[in-house]
Amino acid sequence: MEKKKLYLNLQILSADEVKKLHSLIHSGYFRQNEACQKLLVYLLSFWPNYQQAELERERVWAQLFPEQAFTDKQWRYWCSDAVGLIESFWTLEKLFQSRALPDLLLHEILSEKKLDKNFQEVNRRLEARFTKAQTHDVSYLKERLHWLNTNELAFQRSRQRRFDLTIQHSSDGLDAYYFLQKLQYACVMLDRQAILQGEYDTGISEAWVAHLLSRNFFGEPLIQLHYVILKALQEEAKEEHFATLRESILAETGEGSTLRDVYLFAINYCARKIRQGKGQYVQEALTLYYHGLERGLLLEGKEISPWTFTNVVKLSLRLQQFAEIEQFIDRYADRLPNELRADALAFNRAELYYYTGRVDEAQSLLNQVSYTDLNYYLGARVLLAKLYYESGASKSLLSLLAAFTIFLKRNRQISSALKQTYLNFCELLFQLIRRKPEQMEALREKVEAVQLLTDRGWLLEMLGKRLREV
Image 1 (cartoon, one colour):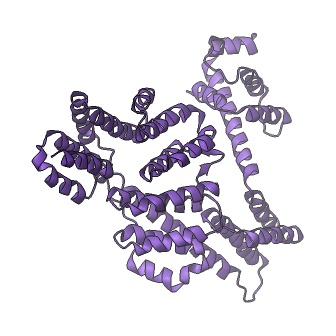
Image 2 (tube, rainbow, N blue to C red):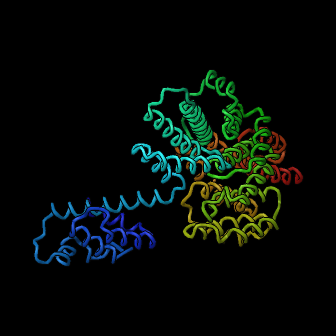
Image 3 (cartoon, helix red, strand yellow):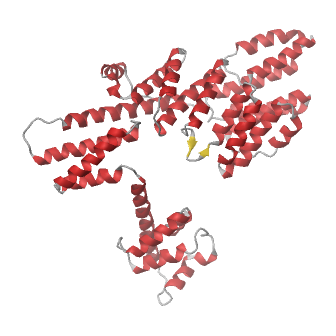
């Protein structure tokens, strides 16, 4: 078990980490026995391939310690020590990558050691950092609370019998951090609940909200913004909440993962409205996507998520912005993750070709996509159904609709609302095939009236063609 864990840890190291780990091993900072050091250095020489026969434990032992007989117990001890060293290395790397944590820990240490002059110097540095910060997200509020708490503990250690506001600052800092984090959790719960099966208890009462309002959101714009998101999720029918949310988002100048989540909450809200047939939210969602991408908030490092990429294409297709889609694909194709790039490009170009009448090319590309993701699978089934219908391949279409319907009904991971969206599409398309011409008008009214439905516009377009044939 220890060998498996050790080899897995070694295999996922990056080239830069391998170099740094070598330096750490030879530095002597961590107390380690010579055997553990020899073992790690030897194993690092095989990076990143740890499936070789030479790495069987008895063969590694014979290579490193030819004069000693192999013992399983000693081997496991050395592997365990090596794993511990790698994990300590990762912990140090995480510490060095943090902007504020090294100073926060130093600030705490200097307080404990009662080195007041050094403590005040670091305190001023931290105060400047927190004062200049533009985005007061959860990470910021958590780090600021750490700083404020250290100052309060330092005041306690000084044993001064005078009125001081450090404890007030700590209390206020705790409130701001708690309320923003609690609102974030509640928003994620409600957003997730709208997609997946199950119901969460947010723990947010009327009294809780009343206290938040009485404190004027503790002067934190992101707390107020998340309160608006909460109201939009709780009272989704009241669209004035979204109008307030959109204006607040577009006016926000900060950055960070919290603001990224705010964009995604708003986009998910638009997606639900679109599924309800409210077409004005297509442009709303597209505006949020482009705005978030331009600011880098919807990028993951330098990469664009395949699902973000696909959503932008789909929204643009609904608005028939074909030239813009070509430009978007060309601009962001190289930013797709390597392992998903081929599927993402094939699927999205297939959709573009379908909408621009290049049906054969679209079907050829769809056959190249490996449907390992649920979103791709659902989208591909719908697109293939449309291709079969428009090409008159009734037998293939009926077979597809039957299989797709069974898949949807049996799948327990899809929320009831999303499942019904696609089941309604299958049922209505089946009726479009089977109903008599004189029944088309009643079917059109049904398509317009049903609340949850994907590709409503396409169904209405096909119905219009059938009605004109009557």
